[in-house]
Length: 348
Image (cartoon, rainbow, N blue to C red; front, side, top):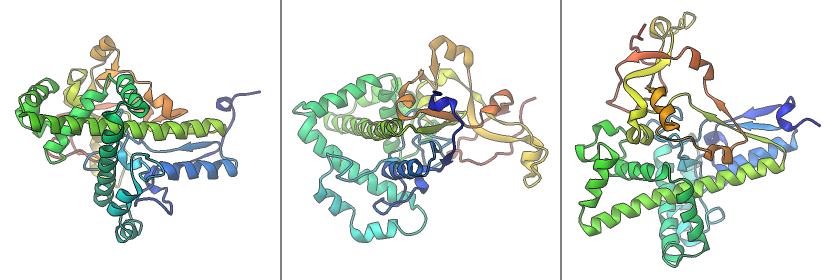
């Protein structure tokens, strides 16, 4: 008998944010993905694919993520049913019926959705810290094991996210003050903070690790559900890594920051003369393959197996582009780069 990977299969592709459910918080989440997988299974579909679920910055572009490894907290199902550290009382206080009614009506209101989920996750983290982290319960042991399993990237990521909060949620690290310019300088800055302020900053770093622990847990549960149904849960990996990301900030030796990558001119793209003439500048830094080969790394961190625990397989977005990846001189850094083409002339 052929394995599921050797069969011809039918499936559906849908971005997570679009899978709206009766109980969501204004955006699709992991519970919606679970329901979609159940629907696919009932109707004989064996593949469910999504766009990238990497954590995004201010432009909300999944192809310009702030981390190649971190999962976007917006995808989390956030309720007492899905997060044991979140009490019903805190949920009802923060997720008021009138607020939920507004968020569930119409398009996704990302600023409001992110603010609500962040507040709920903060409340859950406070409860987790009080009941598990200090007493060192079984749940605390699992959390620390997650930190150890992901030690190659999670510390730099948490520092980056905490510094984003310090810099008004600006992910463009090239605009940060000098003391935040590199992980080494940033850690020196943290050590020099007054003790109460340092403790507050450390707490913030742990909070972002806690959120990733929850996110990985929910997505790994989805993967297990897909395996049980003999379904493929298919992810998506962008071809490049966002310039304004924790990966580039912490591992910039792996990238040539003087150039940006994109697509070559497209003569049939008559609706955009710039793309027709010059191509698309995606704004992602070029890889330094020699350095990455030496370090056995991708995006500044050792090659991760984490995506394999969340997805059965993955599509490498525009993977054909590897053979025609076009370098462009310079790089726009004044604002986070969105999913738009940029009229910068490519290198020949």
